[in-house]
Image 1 (cartoon, rainbow, N blue to C red):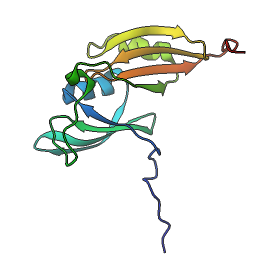
Image 2: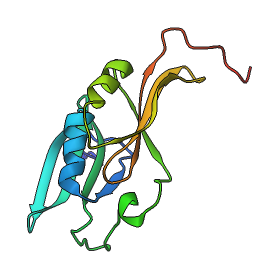
Image 3: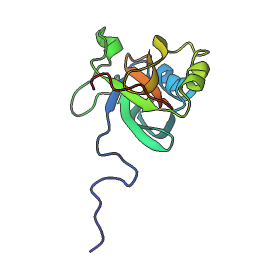
Image 4: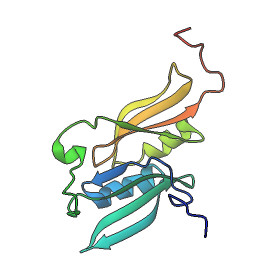
Amino acid sequence: MPDFKPKPRNAAWLTPYLTLSNHEKTLKAYREAFGFEVDVRSEKDGLPEHLEISHGGKPIAMGGAEEYETGYGVGKSPATMGIDAPQAFYIYVDDVDAHYAGLSRKRTITVKEKPADRYWGDRAYTVTCPSGYTWMFASRLANPPADPGA
């Protein structure tokens, strides 16, 4: 009997599934501003019904256009619902300041916080994509501050 694998080889055990509004603008932001890759894109009626997005060769999210009605209902993005996303996605990059510098030329995202040293030992910044999701990008500090809780 062949070895059965319960998930695809490169898949994470937990992968967020995002509902995208204005999906082309959002995907453009993910590719051009964030440096993500769209590894899988299947369409139905001209709309992405399934996407798989990666960063640094690692899968980070799946999603589809909110205009596409799935068998489990129609999802809405935070932007469509007019709310702040209740979660954030935290992505490590090699050089957060260089990543932010490349991002600052893009007009498809909204900067919420510029790069700053964080008490937990990362340098990070926060943005919102066109679909209303919050993304934090970070790099580990070479000399993290002492633990404030110690």
